[in-house]
Image: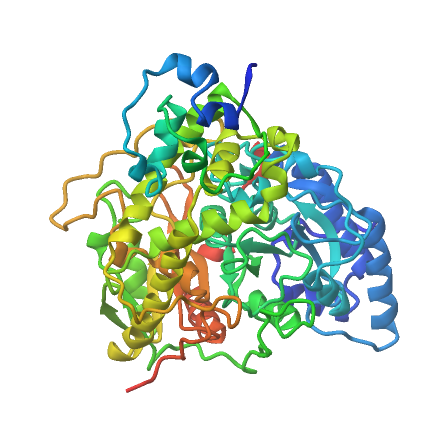
Length: 114
Length: 490
């Protein structure tokens, strides 16, 4: 089983690049979308520092070809969930739940009876 | 070794406790009885990671000595139980169901393990689970150190997960009860598919100290047993504050001395039959369960949840927290030892989430809390009800994405929901995102496959006693929870 490092695959080198034609992807999209990672894995030419945003510097995780395909396949569903979150109309006054200060359920009170 | 009646394997906590106190059998005899069943059926179901005869017999002998001396620790005294293998046990391997952690031996007990020991319970086995509680997602029932856990009702089928061993072991009468965990569905799902009764407590109700962390803001520990009446004493033993877990609530749990048989005054919001897909095997059973609750005196009101993306927010939070929790593993060659490549890819994908998206999901969680805080009183609801699972358990030897399609449903005038659950019917996503307590129990069997089907009831925070009351009343009036699988075919 051939192993490709993820840094290699995501920066467009290695087997993933050989298999897929380069994609033209605007740099801005990479900073906004996990699909940017998919595009990078497919061989798009981008600056690694942009494409690998969030990646542990120096980490060299070994994924097999099958796992890279699974990883790529896992991104669109995740992206679909993220789109729902990003599109939901939240306002400036919407604070995040403070899950590490109080448990998320505690703000809910037992239902009041009529 | 004294030969105990096989029917005792499926007896309730109350029946076993009475037998112990009447000297009908001893804790040692009861423990030997369950150990023998675990040895016989555990490997056939892939339900056990580690059998613990030495520790169990030591605890059982102590239980007998204490009872003989008049020191009764309560309803769990001398009762054999099993722990999902993500609860630390001092000096005994705790694998998290995952090959990379197959030899992990923690130095101390999880708080839950220590509290059950203090209550006199006898730990007989560490039970199977989906590796890392399925945090990176999985596509096969065999995504586990111990292979696919097989459903005692039909060993060609899976148990559900990730508390797969607890589901199988309780259903097969290999333990009296088990402690499972749920981040998103992991108690409710196997409880439903194994035909047992499972309680997912309010987030923070039970300390998670010494339990594997998958999602710090979503993980819950809870009991799984055959009878709703058994769950209360177990929860009472494990609930409460813990200096080892800052999220553990300062709220002890106690059951009322008597639970009424009737449900007058209790208002249950339910999703209509149209919330189930046309081919769902639950459809024929759902209306009868609603009628039964009405006969018991409950008021049922059709509702739909505030339309918010509960599932999307939960997915984002779980993915981010799971990949952070396992960051060391993800950047280690040990990652390759995981049984399911989908899990590897999913954990890796979680590392790509942006902090902005995680925080946006947390904003949505707050918005959902506010919406639910208004929702229950606006409809004067005590409880919400929906399917425990809308589908049969998958065939254990096929990947989940290669299962045969559900049988087409007969034509019906009642509208049906699409296979993808709309947000306003996503009780599981909402309940886990918001840390609401829930109970799952059997309401009958699929006519074609003879497999159990069940409901999930959820309530506002800290309302576990109300959930138990409804489930106990339902079980007093119905026979389903008293049925158990025929293990002769296993």
